[in-house]
Length: 306
Ligand SMILES: Cc1cc2nc3c(=O)[nH]c(=O)nc-3n(C[C@H](O)[C@H](O)[C@H](O)COP(=O)(O)O)c2cc1C
Image 1 (cartoon, protein in one colour):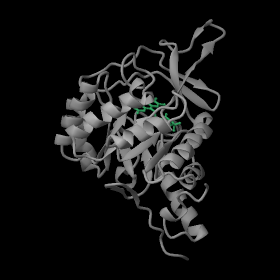
Image 2 (image 1 turned 180 degrees about the horizontal axis):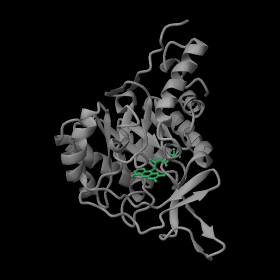
Image 3 (image 1 turned 45 degrees about the vertical axis):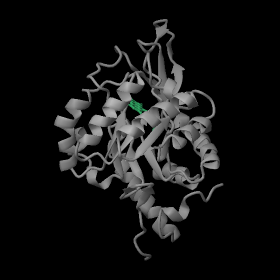
Image 4 (image 1 turned 180 degrees about the vertical axis):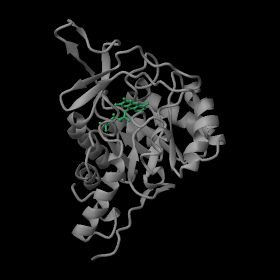
């Protein structure tokens, strides 16, 4: 038997107990699952994206199953940042979770205000700027596919907080590297990729779109090769920036693939809906893989596939 491998993941100023997190919007606020999942054993819990005021999200139906994936148009449903800070954050802290708060907005000012409120609260480890939501009429994705806008939002938020900043980017503008470089130049310490891919689904029997808002974001196993492509490409242009890979991870092997391609951490999204304990199983699977193959740490396998 070898030694227990070192599972820590260092993302700039943020050190996580392991590299496995639950992805924004796919695990509620995290507290909903605390009877089922020991949140203190996850690398981090990323909250659903928080806006300045409560949002109802889009009208139903807003989720559709697709081959090897799902299409969603939730539209950033959340209780607003103030309710999160007062009601939810203390419970996440109590459960021992490392909390990464996802920040969203329709305007640059909204991102700044939400970030400022979160950085005054106790118990937020980092902010993840959702610059990539495809389900918003205004803001969201547009900030993450135009490098100048990406830089403006990141720079403005950087002024408003001392917390580590992660920029979450979208694959819907083509190559992600230009926006990732802009985000880092403006003060982002890590890049998270990818958010969902734009798609539609049609019901042939009812002769209608399956989603009330027609367009949604595709996630799940179907998007894994695309997420891995972008991770690998951005790795080449930003070799020193911590990257968080997300898209289609539903097993330890999937997560290991992302790490081999250069990810410092990996998020689990759609797979949480299939099996809410999957992220913890992936932590264990990663530990077993390192032990079986004699690797002393997660760091030892990062980027082995070039
Ligand atoms: C139902 C649903 C809701 C989501 N909500 C958010 C959100 O609020 N903020 C965000 O940044 N990403 C959100 N996402 C995107 C995921 O965090 C993730 O980037 C994407 O689904 C790809 O990962 P996956 O294939 O593992 O699901 C959502 C995804 C789904 C399926």
